[in-house]
Structure formats: structure tokens, C-alpha cells
Length: 372
Image (cartoon, rainbow, N blue to C red; front, side, top):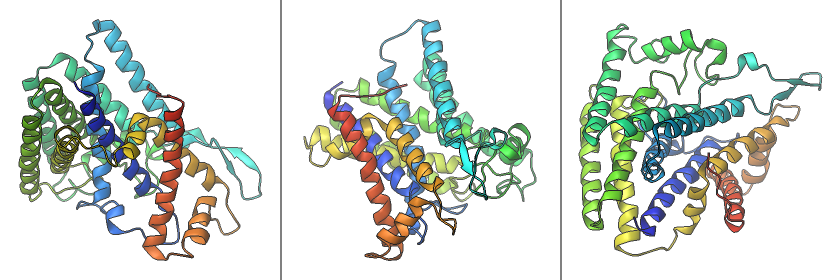
């Protein structure tokens, strides 16, 4: 495995984190551009590609992390520990900053009994756990079969246990019913309809396939010495998957919020195309221009992502009399003055992303790479 291929992986992962921060941190005061928002329910935008790409990158990374065979007990302990830590960090992130200001100006602890249980990092933890075990004990053929079972099984489950009219609705689908029963309404997503969880338990099943696909692509990259052939296989597979997803969309529409199987296939196909393009740029064209910026994000993606989420939370904790948090006020009074509307919102999010990049740059200078 050449250093260039590690570069391609870092760039892919870093590009994902970079865009993730931009789409997650649009301030109040203006509507973001449509492509910088998730599709309302059905449909697809650039923003919808970000989280699946991060899962795909995790699968890619697993290949290199598992190159050195470990005894079964050591492997299981390592995977369980990493999954538990990622899940715990995600849970604590939703409880953070642990205190809030009451209407009379006093401070009180946040009620842990109303803290969201599932979320982005929690889904990552579950997908990583399941995919790691599958990668350890199944052959490539077995992983492909498992992926098909998860995708078609999820499709079937949604329609098998709920009326057809409710099967793909926000709070009436089977996944929502399971989340309501297992998690409880007090521990579910609060920004949408009550009883809906975008990172729910059942919809994690097709998301696992994004990780498995990343792992299989990583195996291809690791095992192949012919870089041109690797690019051709990845790009060909990407085009085929996108075409299959577009056809499946007619019967099982794209929905990131429901993580439909067609959505999983579409995002895997697009990620194959993007990764093949990066490998072609790095390995075939032997180019490095513009890559360093994204490599900085890619070397410490989890730390930079956590920093981006926590810093916004801290800034939003301090509110004025109108209820606007400090980050929103910066967006309103600093970025909506020279620019207006969506451009001002984008400028604020990009500047915030650069602040997060500065943390990664400092960590690079100190040779700090933090892995769980």
C-alpha cells in the first residue's frame, strides 16, 4: 500500500468533514442554499451525501486498521471498546454543556432524563461495531450477501409490519414505532415531529451497508497493484450503483431521513466515483495541489467534528434578551452586513469551518493524531 493511497483516503475523509461542518453550522438570519440543507423527506441534496460518505470512509479505514491480525479476544475487546467510546461521546455531546440558563438568569443542570440517546456518533458506533464483526468473520462474498440482505430486508420490514400508507411516513413507519418503544419520546430527536428519530435503530441497518461498501472498496485498493484498474473498477461500480439506485428510487424513494435502501445504494455509488477520482488525481496524475487542506481534516476527523459541534453549542448557550445565541448573533451582525441572505449564511459557516481547520493545522504542527 503506497503512501499515495493513504493520501487519497485522508483527502476523501477530510473533504467529508469539511463539508459536514459547513452544512451543520449555518447561522440564523437567512435560509441556507437548498443544496446545503437536507431534503425535507424524499429527495436528495449534496448535504444528504455527507454522513453516508463519512460511514464509507470509516469502512475504508477498517481495512488498514485490521491489516495486522489480532487474536479473537483482543480484536473483540478493541472493537467493543472503540464502539462504546464513540457512542458515549455522542451521548455526552447531546447532554453538553450539561447546564442551562433558567428564565430568572440562574443556571441549572440539564435533565439527563431528556437527553437524546441516538445521534450521528451513536450511529457511527453501531455501524462500526456491526461492520467490524462482519468483516472479521465473513468472506467478501459473504459481505456482499449480507449487504443485500440488509438492504432488501429493511425494505421488506418497512412494508411488512405497517400499513402501506404509513410505511414511509415520518412517525408512522416501523422504525419510528421501534424507537418510540425502545428509546422513549423523551430521548428522541427534538427538532422534528415528536416520535421521529433520524438516526433510529431500524434505519441503522441499511447504514451499515455504507460501511461495508467502504470496507470492500478498501480491500480492492489494498489488494490491487494496478492503480488504473482500481480506478476503472471503482468508477464502473459507482456508475452501476447510481443507475441501480435511480431505478430503485421509483419503488423505494431516496430519503436520507429514513435512510432508504435506494438512498444507501445511491450514496455508495457516488462515493465510489468520488474516491476513484481522488485516487486518479493522486496516484495516476501524480498531483498534490490543493490536497493539504483536506488532509488536515482527514488526519483527526473525529476530534475536529466534536470540536465543531461543541464550540457551536457553547456559543449558543449565551443568549440575548431576544433568545438569539452568540453564534447566531455573529451570523446576523457580522456576516449579514457585507453579504445578505444565503451568501451571508454560507460565509459564516465557511469561516467557522476554517476555525475548525485551524485546530487540525495546530494538531498537525504538534504531530498529534488522536484515535479511539
